[in-house]
Length: 235
Ligand code: DC
Image 1 (cartoon, helix red, strand yellow):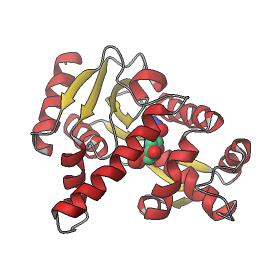
Image 2 (cartoon, rainbow, N blue to C red):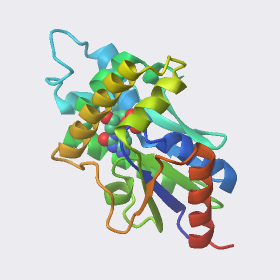
Image 3 (cartoon, protein in one colour):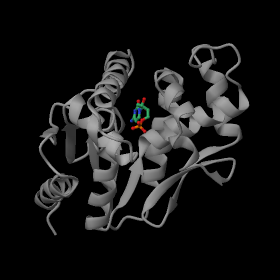
Image 4 (cartoon, rainbow, N blue to C red):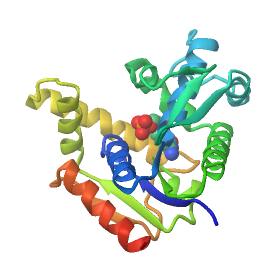
């Protein structure tokens, strides 16, 4: 028997990780945030290979990043119900959320060798789980590339304006018109980078359930996915 997988994909700030985490909690399953692994790798590269004169890490040789990841190592470790990112034995869940990592991560995530390495880590982490419940995995390519056989795939969307508003609110920043406009543009730029890259672009799997969350609360979107999960995994 293999581990049951729910794949949740969608653009930046669509609430994937919050939704995936809460769905996992409600089902008693584990949660794996694949973006955390790309972020941990980016942090490791910044700290060990240096920003130097490079623009957004473009010239880090991909193989050097992958070798570094194996050497340090960069890993996902199951703690309680969620997989946490570690670099050289230290938990980096907080450190990877900063502006510096966010600025460089799209470039690292566009490297084919890095994606192959990350996908292997994810499949290993899930394959090594005790079979009991299952795992909710969130990212950009989970339903299309990493776990295409997942019985339930959900693709979350929301307008850039709504995603920008939520992000500012989360950060505790004033949600004024100009800030929302700027954040919304930054999100669209990241969407474009993720959607137009050659390898594993952001797109819904053919059999994904599309869920527009623009008018939904987090609680409502969690409930919708839990209902889909209960229908897809009865008993
Ligand atoms: O979801 P996030 O913001 O933590 O993702 C960080 C970056 O990693 C983002 O640029 C997209 C990329 N990513 C990806 O390419 N594939 C995934 N499965 C998850 C994240």
